[in-house]
Image 1 (cartoon, rainbow, N blue to C red):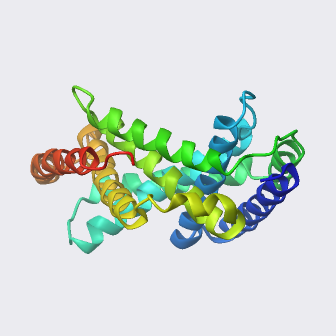
Image 2 (tube, rainbow, N blue to C red; image 1 turned 180 degrees about the vertical axis):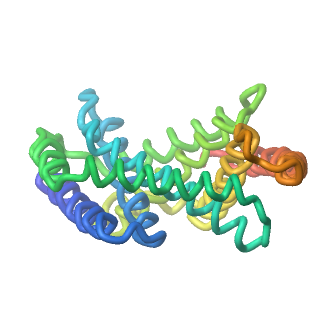
Length: 264
């Protein structure tokens, strides 16, 4: 891949992110936030590939942009928790009120920090950097490095939720870059025949669901309010106990899935 092509890809990805960011600024709807975060993760995966293929540790996302990304991540987490409580018809009035207040606070923070100049500066920094031509072999090396990383994380003792989250990031990196190569980098895509996209996608989806539930339980466990009724406290304790046991089983299943995926 030539330096010109690298810059073109980065420019197009930032253009998409900027468009979604502007849409978030007017509505904060679930779908737009999800698409925004996926677009950012795809760009980050591409930047990781570039860093792995060069001795230069640039390029990286600017701090002001990463702050916006983390803000909508917090909004997404709270939205997912509200959806889960609603779908399962769980009545936690004080905790639900807290989630609504969290969303309101994060929206205000986004509106305070959102500025199109953040996106223009990011494009100026990333799309005008000096890049080297990347060999198609770089994709194969990227794949093997990511699978090796997943295997290492799965064998950690003890294997924590942070290790499981790290496994998902490695799997998603492979999926994002494989998808990009299919569209933009044909010579490299030919070298991906040993990459099992369906298996990786299933793993990433399973871990994504696990992470969403884990975050929900962790938030519930850390929540305390003097206005919370005894019944709500008991219900939260019961949820945490039940879901905690379920998460423990799911984590073992995820780690076993990864151990069965050897680098080829």
